[in-house]
Amino acid sequence: MSSFADLGLDPKVLSAIAAAGYEKPTPIQAGAIPPALAGRDVLGIAQTGTGKTAGFVLPMITLLGRGRARARMPRSLVLAPTRELAAQVAENFDIYARNTRLTKALLIGGVSFKEQDALIDKGVDVLIATPGRLLDHFERGKLLLTGVQIMVVDEADRMLDMGFIPDIERIFQLTPFTRQTLFFSATMAPEIERITNTFLSAPEKIEVARAATTGENITQGVVLYTASRKDRQAKEKRALLRSLIDREGASCTNAIIFCNRKTEVDIVAKSLCKHGYNAAPIHGDLDQSQRMRTLDSFREGKLQFLCASDVAARGLDVPSVSHVFNYDVPSHAEDYVHRIGRTGRAGRKGKALMICVPHDQKWLADIEKLIGNEIPRLESPLTGAPQSEKGPKSVRTDEARMPPRKREEKRDSAPRTDPPQEKRSRAPRREAPVVGMGDHVPAFLLRSFRTAAGETAE
Ligand code: AMP
Image 1 (cartoon, helix red, strand yellow):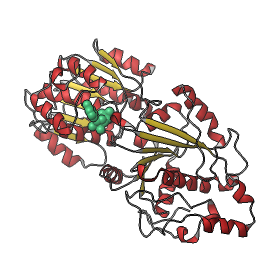
Image 2 (cartoon, rainbow, N blue to C red; image 1 turned 120 degrees about the horizontal axis):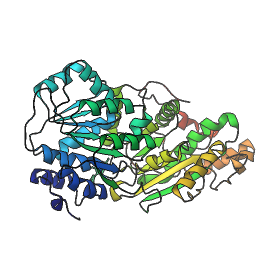
Image 3 (cartoon, helix red, strand yellow; image 1 turned 90 degrees about the horizontal axis):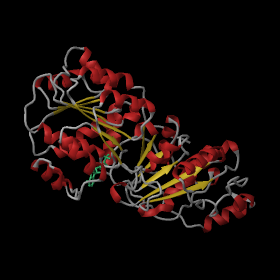
Image 4 (cartoon, protein in one colour; image 1 turned 90 degrees about the vertical axis):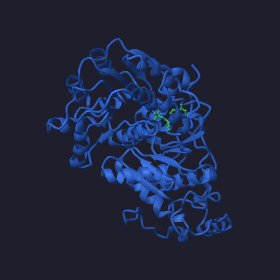
């Protein structure tokens, strides 16, 4: 099947897709849309970046085209694990349903119940929700799920990770057993398999290839790096990150920088801001409105660097990210696949660069085992040489051994960037980095920049 027109979608949906610039369906769309339109249950094994959201939203809009919304009884329900993902589905719905009169409500935490109640009272065709918030509304007696004809579970594997499976089971039980179910998961863990066996009826199973970690559209690389001194590792690693970013030059239009811990996400974002980069953090400890604001400005291109934790970033739809930087090697190999899947989406080119300290080399080995390929070792922009698996004693190598005077001369002869006057915007990086490690940073670059949080990081 090579065209949307062949799939049986409503002409109003087809014109919205054309306006969105989609030319042909992705494999998950080509596989899921026809059985969904035929009223069958669908089990889609696919992750973000494959176009799965349109895979369930487009048939849903077509199927709901006939019929009308009824007060407090939504006709369809989409469950997503996080607020951001739910909000993203809602945005997709708005794009694809622009030529219809279908209505939606988004039920997520951080938004007042009153506003959401008013919408539900009026009647909505599509309810998009996180499981907890949906059950809160139900328990307050404001919502009936007996009118649900189509139920979608998105990112079920993430629901499992977040402990939502009992909520999902409960919600399934509150909806009519005659409903149609469209169920999506990146993986089929035994617990997910059990749920699908219990609540799906003879589903059409569509499995699309895992994120193309070795695909031609994503260039990968890892810098093996050993700190000059253990107590300097954090600071040096941040300098290395900046140098990696700088080395990418103008090709790095926007990037997600992944860290393993929320505290690190904050520190890295603050540090980047301090050094004049346009960066902000996103993780689960930040309040909802702040997360949404950060995400919006990243999507709109006002923010260039999004520092993120895995949970916050999972499934976020941020089109055309030029780079992913893995500041830390993820401890779960699967997360590497998810992380780098943020770039090189929908056939675009992308680059995924990672920093690996000796402690993390076991995780690097796990990742390479999972993806079945060795990630190319890159020269460190700071030393100009790739480090061995064991790593040298110091990243400063020759320069570190020079007497202080000589070091100064060397630094003076290096190309310089202008002192940053304000936070860097999307403007391309100008030159190769001059910033070295720690106390070698020229004073004018150490000028402190106030971050959004009003603090400095180093
Ligand atoms: P998803 O996997 O649903 O998060 O979608 C990933 C990205 O692909 C989103 O930015 C969509 O707008 C985009 N997309 C979805 N379907 C298509 C298509 N058929 N052609 C081009 N882009 C698409």
